[in-house]
Image (cartoon, rainbow, N blue to C red; front, side, top):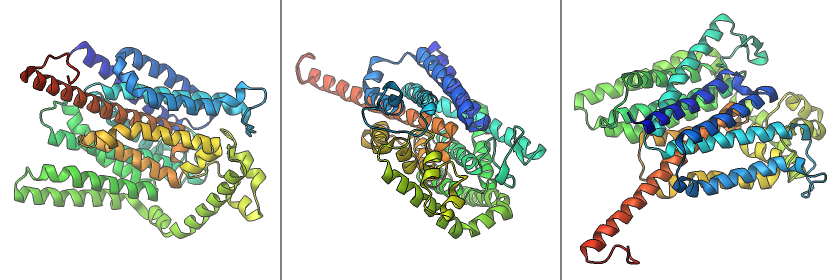
Length: 452
């Protein structure tokens, strides 16, 4: 093993450990924990970049996503830079701007570090391996909490969610999203192990991947989260359809049938054997919950229309308290501290400019994958994209990406996808240039000619 391999291994372990620590620490929900996490993210990101020391080619390609990220950060942080804001923003909680600014910079540091790891050969695979190991440790800790005191996490009462499994979070739906991501990443890693025998992996990873898959599915199921469970099963089915078929073609007919049957039965037993009455009762309440959710979205949409430049980080509560149009709205929303929709959350935070910048950032991060690296059919990379898609769906109806730990996890996953896809594009360009050199040389043209 070379020194470079060791640095990649250390960097991937550190990145996964940061996400694990945040998830274990209640998802670092709340200003105090989130500020500490932001400091750790900044230091950790800088350490990883120092370890890997990315090339000029990396920084040249990453300039657009990094620039957009810094622009989004500047939009959030800039009201505190002026005595009178030049854009006329009157945000509700200016005292929270330093903390929000630090959080954003921490997430940007993790995204950049993840991109640098993904840029290196084997970086994505090593990071996902560590993610799965830490994920199993997290499940073990969460189950221990549930056994010793099902009403609390780290001694903090879960309030209205006492009857539900919340992992190491205080919110069951956030925990479900995290466990769903774990299951999908485990499935992608499992398919990569099965399909690519040329890539050696430690024995422990062959053991951990299937356990993390079943553990993630089971943990997600017992949270009682309907959206996370549904999108997880859809994502797993799509991965099985794309990569499972390739693997099954290599098996004999009888063995193939046994594998398919055992797999379907196993998933059904894990899911439906763990759901319980609480989850089925929540499924029965979908219609009533949907009506209440749409009422919330109507309230927050009205708030957005009243402030196109947003209310600033932490401004939702104050804006809602001053914006209730009826006693009914106050009754259903006074205790809600999230829009339960990622688009509305961005609009409430920074208005339409912030939403536009963040949308451009997402496009820049995924452009290499969808535009040029669509031929990159590595199961782990596809699983990363599927996991991010799940997080967006969960954040469209719930609080997933309002949870700092999950927002940081999404930044890491996006950075890994960008890094691997951009490296694929870079290697393809280098191969193409090499082929042109060989072709020109064989045709008698000097290598320094304009066509070379």
